[in-house]
Length: 272
Ligand SMILES: O=C(O)c1cc(=O)[nH]c(=O)n1[C@@H]1O[C@H](COP(=O)(O)O)[C@@H](O)[C@H]1O
Image 1 (spheres, helix red, strand yellow):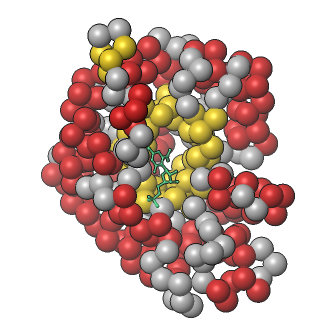
Image 2 (tube, protein in one colour):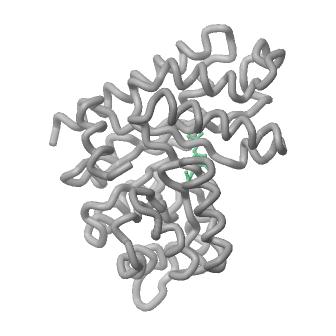
Image 3 (cartoon, helix red, strand yellow):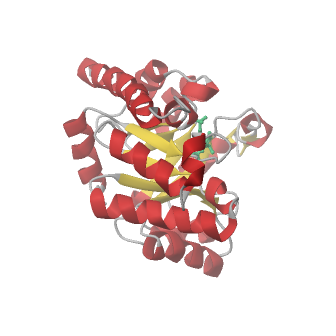
């Protein structure tokens, strides 16, 4: 998907919501456990109930890999379902990969070609030759971890390197990578006040912003400091939406949570 198409979807739906499909068999409604593929049954119900309120879905691969081959098959069915039924949706494989060049190329093929995701999250630690194999794919997006939402972000990401914080070094240096127009970045909602500085380095790049809801980040602060001319934000909520209820009405309950966020986003977009 092109960035332009994503921006059009955001304007049309008045939403920059990304719903995280962090599907956990210990948390989904018990009645689904009798189904052949409870993970896919849960995802399908959530997607059907919420697709009009969001522009992106982000399955975190950890939740699928944890169930072995059955989990991977559920991931494959979920992305196929999205691509066949809701092609206007931007899809993110939250896999946090990155390795030496030839290995990264295989990861990129797995997520972009075999599974057919629009984007994948990548750790920048191994540098240029670990990221560029992902960037080589046209109209696919590489979402680089810049400043993450967790406490451990302060262990390395804010330490000084070459006279600036490491996360700023990641932003600056990655701008020189080949096909860097295919880059997006992760910035945690819990670090919203850092967004002013981040926008000085990457004024227009799209940011994937997890950490609202269960982790306590504020949507209004993210918008205040992080919104660009093109909106430039995909704000993710996983547990806060998909586990709104563990009863028969779970999909409807998740749609209500998603609707609350979409309304808040619509108001933020009108403020611009
Ligand atoms: O790359 C991510 O999506 C990510 C980066 C980050 O800094 N923090 C973060 O929470 N995430 C992911 O975003 C999701 C957040 O889930 P909730 O806290 O349940 O909304 C999880 O899948 C995390 O792995």
